[in-house]
Image 1 (cartoon, rainbow, N blue to C red):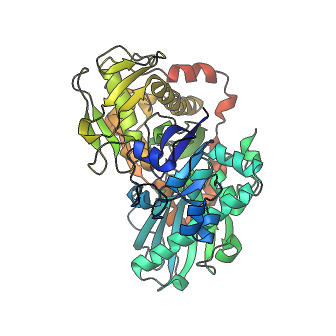
Image 2 (cartoon, rainbow, N blue to C red; image 1 turned 180 degrees about the vertical axis):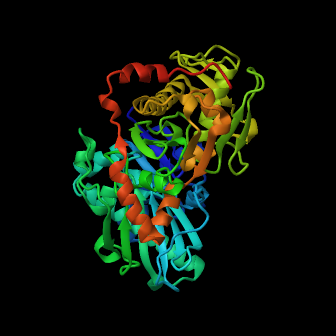
Image 3 (tube, rainbow, N blue to C red; image 1 turned 135 degrees about the horizontal axis):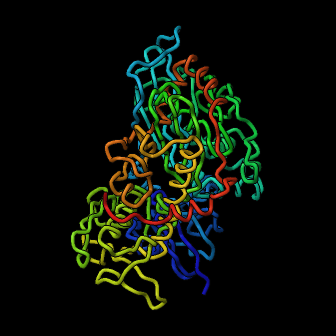
Length: 535
């Protein structure tokens, strides 16, 4: 019987189903709540979800859902089984996603342009997974409001390369990806206006930072060159436009500044990170890492900037982990093993029964398995009362048994999951290693290691160091800086001086292409090894 993968958003939880299992039943198997007053008989119309690709609507769909929503992929979860991989958006759960908003910026006083009094501006961090917007007073740099949401492009591909593939292979794929992001921008503008009482007409400026793929898709540019060597962006320079030209329905008269790209996989978000931390003017040696599906790594050697990108994949976002999920209610975000034979101590977002593991919990799990000698340095799970062997011979660590902590299902961490983490952490460590070697820097010379982004903010640095995700610096040197890209976007929004500065900095950043390095395979293989235990 044909099986397909259902991925539920925004949690990222996934399940393999056959074509006799309805979307509603699959959600229940994962412990996800979808309203269904009629018990799944198609009569109440409450179990509405968004499905991509869109199945043909049923009679029940047509009787309960508007024509406009039908065209957007809204369907009744009880009415549909699937025979192909499908993303399902559970709209009631969107607000429970844990999205990082706060960041750290060097300097406490914002540079602001003169000539503004009551006018407002919005700084946008356009990420692969999330979009964060900040409403700012242009006269004094005071933040008035903030809003965030999942990037809706995620249903067309969970990482940059899959979206590039969708945009280039599907008819009107690029237009679709652009349209859904612009609609999200409009939603965020309206949300900020409604939550703060600010008139949309007073919003006269916007700034946008994002990686090159997000940048190109927003502008409707050809992303094909980003998917093949030498991976050059169509445009590297910054861009000044307005809301109407960009395609917004809101803030149409606003001036829109889009940050410059550095290289094919290092974009305006990294430039914003550099600007927020003023890595161009430091007297120290600072290593900055933003860990995501595509990890960006920056090394500042007394203000001289070097960078590279590392294809870490989506393991740390739970996408390639059997029971992985995003940082949402029900996600295990902390794990400790006191006794190898007993259930681990866990902390769950929302203090509800556990549904899966998010990024910080995934890193904790591998670190704890290693420190408990339940996994070798090579990544092989060892026999234990909490490590079971399936009929096919695959080993799995039992994170949660069904019934433990009220869980509706077992939560396992498999041998394949360990391998996925090894590959992901190996990519990040390889990038950092080559960047330091190319600059003639030893790990012992690094003064600070800045962790940017949501994953870097929520992981336990001790666990990250223990598995060798980060170069072996002292724990006191590891400093989370939160959404540093968002902080840089604010600076670009408020100050033409800051925009000019980043345009001067970006051409001077030395980009290192990892794929061309002679010893790449050797260094990568060594970087996948798990360290000897907790530091």
